[in-house]
Length: 109
Image (cartoon, rainbow, N blue to C red):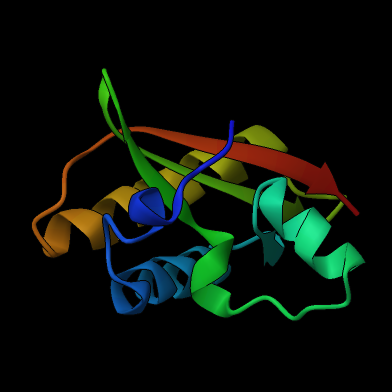
């Protein structure tokens, strides 16, 4: 799914950075990666800012947050993803944003 620049400003970069930091504090998380869009950016040798690892956009269902994680191979990936979802929702809720859905994709290293 392609996000327009308007979608990326639904929530400020400062708040998204706080959410990414909270996810990095989840036990088992080794890295946070931007979904798909970041792959292209990295292939073009352009650096990715921390806040760009969390994409937030509106859908018919409501606000949706997306990020990709790398986790330790001895971690329970499902449990880590659930904790990451809670971390994102908690930070965004603290700033007045209610997330309808958080999509987390896991890479086990």
